Length: 497
Image 1 (cartoon, rainbow, N blue to C red):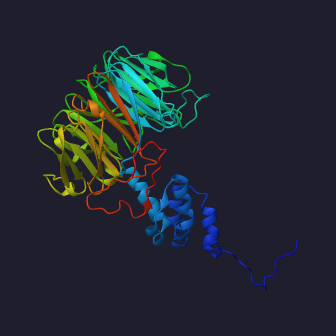
Image 2: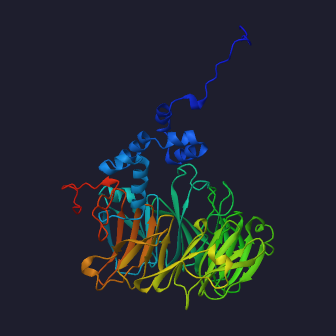
Image 3: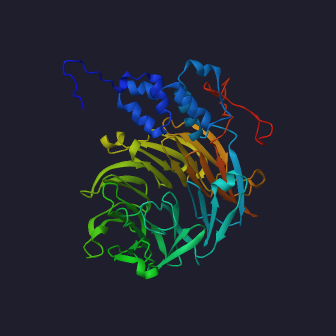
């Protein structure tokens, strides 16, 4: 093989020597996360990632019936795409896909939604509905009554990282876990109860918000009226009932009400009991010495309302206040919010330093960073928009959704501005005067599920805004969107714009 002549100049081609259009063609095969990563790598790749050809394809693939308005031609197509995506996330439309599911006239205890599942409970019964069947017009649901008493908690966990049903289940599926006053915990998959855990000496009151441990050794935690915390092995070796019980943790004197898994260490579990005593457990040592795995204790004033861990902090809402505690020192760092006489609901988004609280007829938004410097925290903004207590809250980076049992409507607010974007009725129009108001809600991206019940029946209402076309028109607006033109279709069955 001939050696290169060192006297001749060597030709080198860099990636930046390739023209933007060619790179944009290649980048068109990336997903949104990869495009974002590409844009952050350097200025040249940012130009590539922001190319109109990429975002025009994303726009057309996502919303084939939407046409970019003429006013958007002077703007980047990416801006039009992001504007519509944000508007859909904030439910700023009047024509979502709507499907009503009628059930027995009975209060709803819980509603959950994730990926392709809508799950709800009424007393001891549990209902399950597949979202893709609903969207295709093949609406169907199943009711199961395996529990013998009221369902107290419901969680959806990804099967990814567990060894449950290892031979059959893809990792992107969810498993449903329920606890009940019948002293049992049940694991559901494919619409049926697959396992039943027994071990508590009383009603099971709460389940952990995440699974403990690492991949392949996931553990479920539960708390009960018997004042114990119990750890259950989730593996595929067929262990059931008491055989799946990994450890029982003692220390609380009153029933366990709430629990949350620490963000900085997946073996740490934080629990709070009815008398507002907080304990931190290192579950990695629980199987060996169950009496020594409590690694921290403190207490907070008032009855427990909500608890959420983020990194090394735990935010505890109890009584009339939300308190932040450092799990490394068990010291109270700050009082992040105060609402008197008491809080009805709380949502915490530490990643944006925001807390939303529900009171009697009002909703407040709090800035955690701002209240670090004061002994008397003040809300950023307060909105009085409901009749009666606000007991249901959802908050994500785009929106806040609020509701209560004495109000038939839920309100949708922008997270950044606290501006109201929409109002959605939970019940049928003819049942509005006799309805329970909002009896539950769950939100996931473009989708929302609400519940209500009246004298004749209960109602689960599913809305999907993914392909909505008619924007909410605010008073004084000549055109609802400067980025896209809404289209109406006479055969769609929806309202005309």
